[in-house]
Length: 234
Image (cartoon, rainbow, N blue to C red; front, side):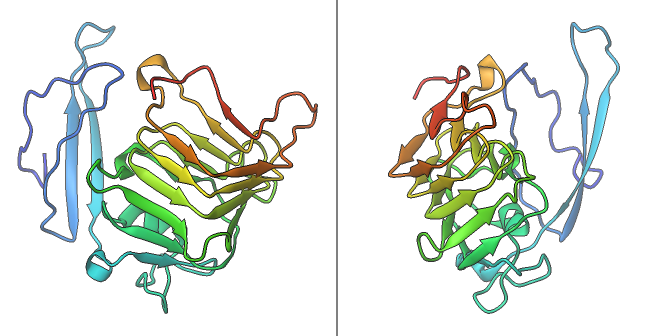
């Protein structure tokens, strides 16, 4: 249901597979209601989820600028930059998020979830405005600084440091991580790993990255760049 109008009916959703349906948002705020009825399980009771989607358009495709002092209410321009989290929510496929120079100290892990994926023709980009001049600091308290579950992202030129565990965890598909630096994290600098067989990460490219001085407390687990058991093809 989209604003109380049925837009999808009878769609079949398979276990461990992503179901997607695209539509245009005409209004600034749109209310969705999703009703899922299980089959063959312990219960046939319907599961209802309600989602409110707010539409904002920044710069009409020219990309978004963020800074360490950016806010969610900003315009995303060079003169009025956003925060990283808001930019990730609103960047459009094919657009670029530019991190202006400085050290970013997020209060929570930067989580790029599946619903914020780009597309094969129009990937999303997250990159330093000047390579090597933007640092995201986990301050020793964020388990991972960046968690990338989304697909078709290109990350470039960012320094990721001081995670409580891994600097970055890559679990999505068809992503490129280029010219990144992972350092002084309390476990592996960059880890490529998934959570279950059907959704293992695949077709990712790690290109010209540097990882150094990543060290766990027992000196027996941390790697510079690691791929773990849950790896698919590519």
